Length: 170
Image (cartoon, rainbow, N blue to C red):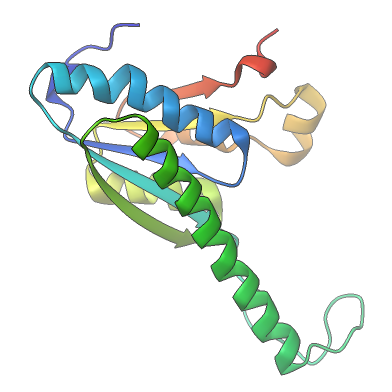
């Protein structure tokens, strides 16, 4: 695949999460975009972006199901969230190291609606490219759950690549 002006890429944002699809997209980006930039003596910065769901606006004494939310539960949820972020970023860092490409990597963590955080970060950083994995949802699931990549494709101003995991290709 040939990408126009790939040698001029300075900042590439890769959206990562706990899925195999996002790690595959990161690996694809390293092998097909970043490696080409290196051949052109340009070393872009790779920004790994993880978006965690935002917590409820405020913790009330009872959640929707009527269960008591004590301080221990809130602390456990926050601890779990931190561990999940650390796990995803560690996996992404391993993928980067396995590529054997010397590249500057920045890690960013956002909180909130994934499509808004991703698009906002891409705009704020002035990214030259956005890379995302595809979960390969069918029509019905995509209709019910929405598609973050579809929404981002409509909103970002830079080129965007949606990478399908080989098992999701028909």
